[in-house]
Length: 277
Image (cartoon, rainbow, N blue to C red; front, side):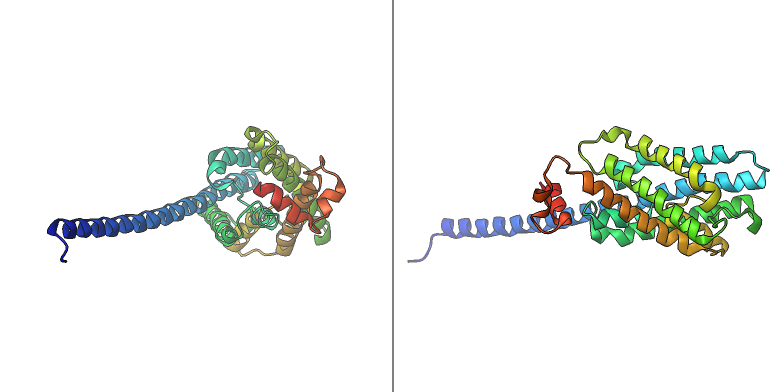
């Protein structure tokens, strides 16, 4: 028995609706993927802009202080670094997390506070922002080599290396506390991190330059071709940041007995399960 014309039209209509629905679902999936790509590109751009401003302000204060006979003064430089970090944390922290520092990015990824897939793009963005800021400073102020605004060890390189580990440990410990622990007062993160930077520059500035950030040292070094002691400012901050994040994660779960933390055989996997919940 042949199907009626009405039934044929109804079947065709349903097939058309199904095809259209599938098409919309595919378009929605592509749209979601596009949205994710746009969000990620915004994060990367925020890291570029944030690092640019940080290096332009901080290293600019160092360069201007040298060029114009100490007008800013050493305490002024310390304050500029602290304020620059604080301002940019509040400006783009809600977009990218306001890392501005490859050592911070690597430490957070290692302890499951940041996606490993985003580590390399973040580091590239931070180095790009630092190089652009350093190049801008050289062009605007016509900086000579004697006015180098990068970081150079004063005295033995080993002393600066140890200092960089210690001050970056302090910085990452504070970041872990205010930025990755839900019990902390998040609104004060910018102030806490900025003040930590300022204190560290006061302590280590005259000795190591108080980099705490491979991008802060690599940008000026690349632009001005001055690489003396650069290993200090790559290895030291990375070691210090990883140690600082590890130390904070040791005390993060003080409300639990030790056997509960260690029964899984891995502290980090215990921590990641807590974060996932």
